[in-house]
Image: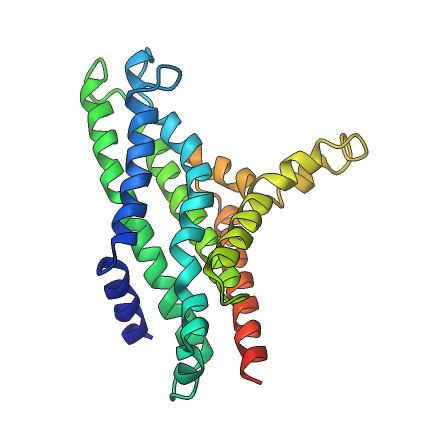
Length: 243
């Protein structure tokens, strides 16, 4: 598993794609948080990182499938996936190795955003006037959200040899599992009966819950279950293609 992890990490950072993806994420967030007047921290009258944590899921829905689209699609396109499966290594080790590589790159992309926290901390009046617990909870929620998107991205990558197709499937599934249940709960037939239950099926509900700074075990279990569900579907895909 760790040999696959190291292989994928080396492939990421030896390619300009990784730097482009990371740079694009930081550039878009930087513009939103410091330049665009409707969202700029300089226009706010209190210290907050609310803009970062409200905009990041939208960017992640495109960014994470872009990171993951090549993980299995490229292997299938080059014919190396079949070769990899002939080696004494289980499907799970292949999946976990690639999954952890995607998560590692995702965390590397998030780390520079701590500069924003430091900036807001220094700009607060008085200095340090920021809800550190809420920020920590939001970062935890963002990491769990990114890990869930990564599981979806790998599952999407297992479907097609074409990386663009894998990317489109990944984006569609990420948006569906993040927003679709919220909008579905607003249908008149569900309001007052099942609307809250339907909202709890979506990632945005649990992400918002963790972002309040109170970590609920139900939210952790939800994200953990979702990650395992999509990785299990990925294994079924690999098993089907092997047979």
